[in-house]
Length: 137
Image (tube, rainbow, N blue to C red; front, side, top):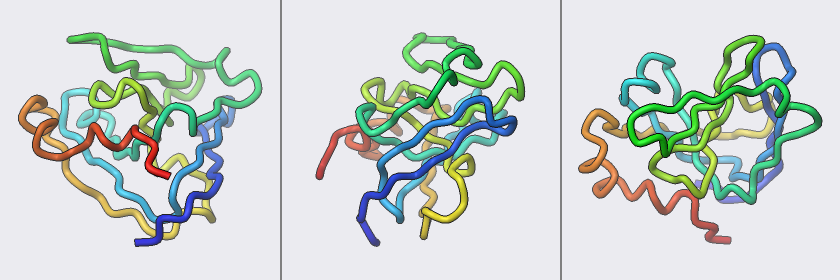
C-alpha cells in the first residue's frame, strides 16, 4: 500500500463544517459495529489529532453527543446532521475521519477492516487500533 501522506479536504453534506487532514492516499478505515457507528453506518480512518485541522467558522456548526464512558466525542453538523469526524474512544488522542466525507480526488485506496465495537475491550486489544493515532512518519 502507498503510504504517501497528502492533504485531504472534506466536510459535511451542507458544507458548513470543513476540515483538512494529512493522511496517506491509501489507508485503512474501520467499520465499527458499536451502537452509534452501526446506526450511522460510519466507516472511518484515524489520524493523530495534530494532523487534523478544522477550518474557518466550522466549530460554530458542530454539536457533540457522548454516552457510556463519555470518552468518544461524536461531533456532527447542527444543520445537516452529518458526522464527518469525531474523537473515538479507541483513540482519544486522535481524530476519526469518515472516509466518505473526504472530497473526491485524493484517496487512491481504502482497505476496510472490521472493529467489533459491541465487544469493545477484546476488539481493542486484538486489532491494534490504538496505534492509529500515533504518528509514525
